[in-house]
Length: 172
Image (cartoon, rainbow, N blue to C red; front, side, top):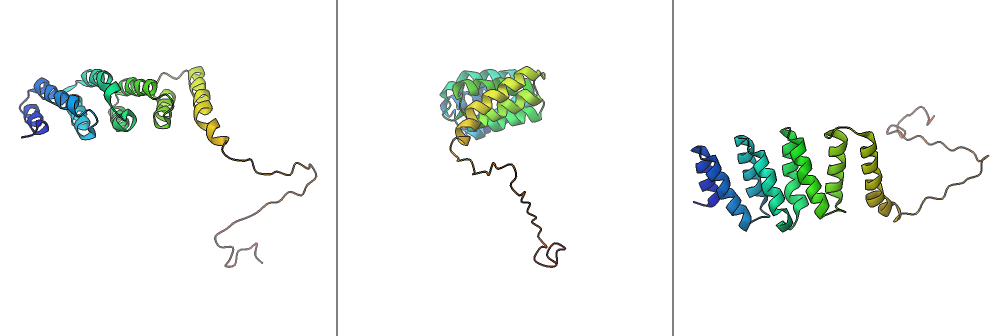
């Protein structure tokens, strides 16, 4: 029997602490396994050990090769089960490791807007920071379209309709 199967049997028999310990041992050797992390999350959630989950994630986070893709789904599941503060702790820690990661920065920005105590100045500051780091570099890659700045130029309006070809009132 593999270690996850053994952990499931322990969990079913009520030995939650031992089951979590077995999964933690497994995660120390395969820290990037999303399947094992998912099982660990489920056991912690069902047994009310979310603080243990967060502490363990923060402990091993520097060893995870791709913490953004490894933990973003877990953070979304935490939020779905109303563990918003715990999710925020994990996402903020990943943001400190990967400060220019768009996925994490976007998630962090949304968390600050939605789940954190709404402080408009903090949300605006996060928006400004996100815009400077993520949007400005992209917008510099594209040329602005040429615009006729003559004040008396004719205004051109266009209408597009899917029935334009077959009897639209503008066609006649």
